[in-house]
Image 1 (spheres, each protein chain N blue to C red):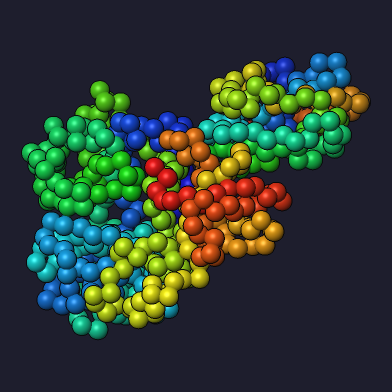
Image 2 (image 1 turned 180 degrees about the vertical axis):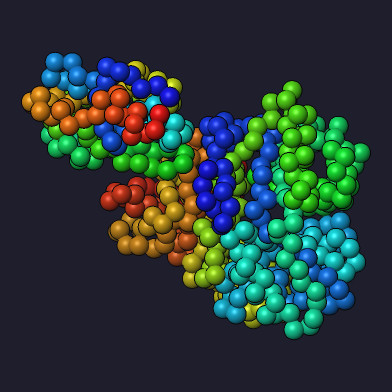
Length: 126
Length: 342
């Protein structure tokens, strides 16, 4: 189970990588391994401004469908189109090629509620 | 692991898709010991079975198996099962795990003729060895000539030095192979020997999730999803195991349904847009009116298509008919296709 130290995490098993005021968001290694084979990821919220906790899309895996909850509020800038063609990227490289969206955030406060790698490890019992 | 009908069952050991392909292209092993087994014996055994089963057990002979439904007074399905004729007056019924208690009660109630009925579910283990390489995997473990066992036939013999195993050319995957019924205490030995032998073939253990995608591609009904106490075998497309040459529970109701046509029918459908149908989603007509519901659905790993089964009004059951699936507030177009999908 890989949990990267330099990322922030949500209790809904998403990770957040901050670069200036842009957050890159994906699902954690734990989430992808629980979901198993991902068939596709649907995000229709590009261009929208959403609040923390809003549903911004869904992950359709062979086993089940799960909603994706936004871990930070802001404007959805971009969806990773590369995972449209090969959703298995999310299974294979959840923190890299399998990123899902980029969000423009307004204030630093947005990320202060997120979990550190340490706290996230505790949450999933890793 | 997941709780299923009182058992801890593996949903998957590995990737569901990898397990699926392993069965379609090679061979995989399922521990399905949760399935229930009843023995029906004695001079009145056949009479009892003829009175409760939609298929006709008169057509059986020793060494042959048959798929059937067992109906309630309204013509709904109490359970779907496989009947094995073990000996002249001895039959084994293999039932769904979730229906073991219901089945025992139902058959006992119908057993006015005094056949001997015994629930031996706890004494029996069951492995399904499924896939085109199943014979190759098992042939060195037994003296029984496996290739000589026709589909839906069985032999009782020794395998992995375990005596009296029912070696049955049956399964729920549509990829061929065998089901091995043994005593519970022999199950570990059987499993370990098969995996030892299967190393070179790269045999995989297969979980419940791939069992579901495998059977769905073949259009096999899953009890609790596609069929239940309220659906009839006629509606469910199980007319081929409903034989009106003998009276059975609710046979007169089902005969009328068969002759006049049922109001709804279980159909297969294929999504025309990217979306996976799931059990319980509504099926709509083009105006958005609900005309049925999805009973099973998933990705078909073999074809890459998104497929499902569900009940629709009979008027909408013809292949190529456009239907719509209500998926999380959206209306996604699908078309009815002929079963099986594969």
